[in-house]
Image (tube, rainbow, N blue to C red; front, side):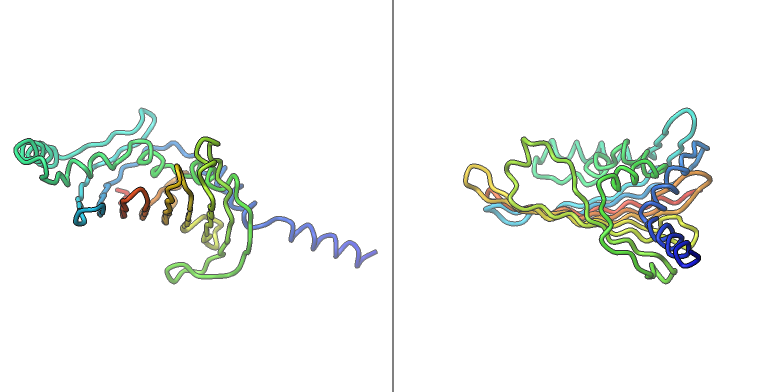
Length: 244
């Protein structure tokens, strides 16, 4: 009997995976206290068609404040003035690049708000996750538990019918305190439409810290690539949040 109880206790202990623990932890991180941060965003993009490659890049910064009244994003006057100068120059020379204006458009208010309170967004990413492997690891020199996941994204049928291959993998590093240190994902796809093949993918990584009851994304990087229909493109973005 004693051996049977020991075996049952061990089975119950092992039944709770690191993914279950992480989901439970994230559900508790729904803090709404005020937070201030500095945002720095940069991008680099290269497009190619039958002509020579076209490269554009830019960088902007802003002050963020999020609290009970909502999200406030403040751009400096020099940044806005530079954006105006770029528009004036482009009106004279249509091929003129507008790095500041493009970088400003890249800062999505919804993504910015989620970066300051990211637990719910990460829970959505993990909703369709299947745990493939769990092991001890390290992240940037810190001891961690690594979860290797397979994701099954929900794609509208109007888009899925053109896909021939789709692979989505993810990793989560969890610190000794049970809080996520980082999340990375990799997407690769191939398909065809009107007898024309296309392919592409995306890789991204987010690093986290806990601020009060919030999970804040301190650094987010992404790279998108695609080719097909006689053209190809590659885009790299980096966003850094420094909490005040």
